[in-house]
Length: 287
Ligand SMILES: Nc1ncnc2c1ncn2[C@@H]1O[C@H](COP(=O)(O)OP(=O)(O)OP(=O)(O)O)[C@@H](O)[C@H]1O
Ligand code: SF4
Image (tube, rainbow, N blue to C red):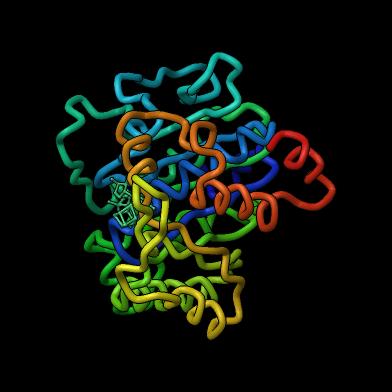
């Protein structure tokens, strides 16, 4: 494979989901955005490049699936027979899914490149890429030195032939995660990756009894960071036990709890920041 090979030739829009810190809900956000786009009538792909702990197969109830190859490359696993949401995850390639994957150096780089180039996506409207979390040793040194992470390095080298719409940065309201996302923001600016905006996750707690939302942590960190960085603030997702449960059971949260604050925020992000106006008819028709 040369670096001038056209990657993702059949994909109209590509979005990356990034976070500076692990466990802030990056995979949850990637999954719910993909489901919101699918529910809006688009053909969607979800690429899980979390080499250390892939969780997307579980979130979509695809834990026991495995990928197979065709002449064009790896065939994604589809969530429904109409093939409107295809998923490719390193989780599908693991023997024992409880084993953490410890791939380092060249093997990791080769795997990321393969994930970006060798999956046979068939005419997608949207591809959401759940990037490796910011907790891997490489990423920490990247953050310290402001060098390119393995993923971004691969992506930026390859992406001259693909139109990447930009990155969605996920943070939680706590100071540490916000500090990490600040470095991620600087990192995106330096590498020329467009930032779609900052999304604050796990902001407040939705009571399962009365649906009242209580702010149990600090509030508004993501929004002030977005203001400071002059990028859009995409909204805040509360901690919603129904979302945790749906993710745990592989259920479609967007369909099942369409009126919840969390689902409405995801749907709104899709409408406002991901679907270009000329394509937005589909969203209003289907939501
Ligand atoms: N808004 C939310 N409400 C309820 N539960 C949530 C919310 N966001 C995330 N979670 C839960 O928190 C846990 C961690 O989320 P997730 O796996 O998406 O984080 P991550 O940032 O992708 O983690 P990693 O860095 O390990 O990949 C999961 O169990 C998920 O269901
Ligand atoms: S938010 Fe309302 S229902 Fe929930 S625990 Fe508090 S008082 Fe009870």
